[in-house]
Length: 350
Image (cartoon, rainbow, N blue to C red; front, top):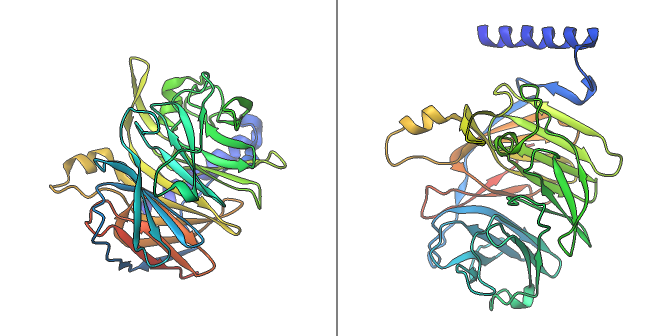
């Protein structure tokens, strides 16, 4: 209680300084310290015996198809299942250096007729049609602009463009065309501690992103600290929300960012009504001191309004990384990297 009172006084002092001209864009930056509603959720673990997933990082579905991306599988990065039963269909996206093989998978996005995947090491986006998923035959490869520094996430913008975070420190994200060329660059890293944008700062502010074309909302959540950014790509408004853990903390060594502070968010999904995020909130010191086997992932799902208001805090009975939200059926499917049965289904309570 004492910490909360101190935190509120700090917030009050911040706003008084802003009122007297000490801050710019004060309507764009709001601190939060709690959620309107807190709910505990127990999930149902799904039985998947024929596919051994090592480190399932992302999960997404479209219609009757679900894909799970596994970062550490020895042979394949992607695994296709029926939805919602999660019966195995095929594994694809072969790991390797040969043409049509993948060196590193960062994320993927399903479309009406297939999926796009991001290979950071090969510096390209690859499209696979639905009909070729079982055969893993690439339909199109798009090399990324040489000015893009190691893309670690992407989102579909429209039929002809993507959104990719910028890691040079100059901008927050790029919009690139289907040929991989930068069409426009937007935003600045909204740090109050570090005014100079450089690669180390951009590394510390590494963010996971999602975009919903129906409401033009792009959400970015930091892997370190507790920062949510919301961009409306139609009217160019920008909202910054900072939680109790503050902005990303790091130490710089040789021009590189060495993480400190806490592990923050690990996934984000923008629906028609809300922004869903996975939050960890554990310090690196706590993570390093935990006994073996180590528990990896976040135990919280935070739900925000499209304006960034903190609405619901779900505390889970599993530690998870990626989520797939289905508001129509009021379900969330999550992946737990600590279990041999990693797919967990939760029912929404709001």
